[in-house]
Image (cartoon, rainbow, N blue to C red; front, side):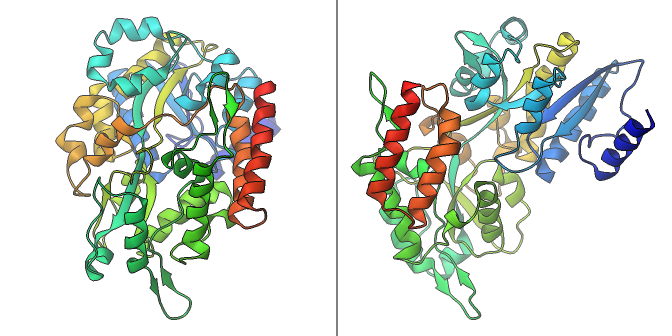
Length: 424
């Protein structure tokens, strides 16, 4: 018993698990529910604290404990999986819908269709339909949308002005990006450098160039094609031929987004393809002017749509209280808090299109909403797509970009592995 108390004190002191209101957050006179989230940026945590506090004021019989996952793309869902496997799941948990099938197949998620239809009769009118449809599986709703994120082109207006380069426009293609980046790159003393553009995610660029990892009926792995090769050659040339970008492949996947954000915030990157959630962090930039535009177009104007929402655990002992919290997070009041905090784009149309969200900076904030209509989820209809992406696709593509294997040989190897995944 003393050992358990000692461990709990250590966790409290480290701030590892519960960050809302201390470690002894259980009130025997109230219903206590736990909310698990993978969002860990300070701005995101601040928004969640505000939301939970307001919810508790409106629902004095319910207490919410918030726990966050470890940072790092390879580990952010591990804590949730361990809790579910140990039959000790949180009552409510944040989920990105392109990962939800795994949790549905485990029987970890409650079917909330009845709750949603009862409390949100005008769901697809009030919320963006493209967002809502991603929360359903086989006609049932398992996740209620709170916001969405897409790819955007972020750029430093001061660098563009100093080099007399015209700002990006929705008509830009990848050739426009390259021409601008060549003019914007600066070699400075003491090995300092300002990069014109940063290497985009390989899968993003492959799909923009018209390539697909899996396609056809019956489904086949089609990654080894001319369009995929052209996309990877473009990425490699940004660093090795044109010297306008660092080589992101030397970093592990968990570090790349943060490294890109730091380069941009420090004025060392004129352009890069970022995500909508970065708006909250970049709002603190004071030393230069910046803006956004829709992503450049290739064969298609592709952008990854990620829908963030909340699930109720199938094993919760408090389904009604848990749903109340989910409902509040996606309500008008909840989404307006999200709008002001800029944590992605609110799923509720009235919040996303409000002055609270659309007020500068950046000047062209409206592109974060418009990009939705040319975005799609980055999933493929094979059961183990996420495993293939993390264990096969990303490591092999990184080896290609690092020059460890030729493009042709690497994609041929990847296609064979992809075909085996289909056969599984």
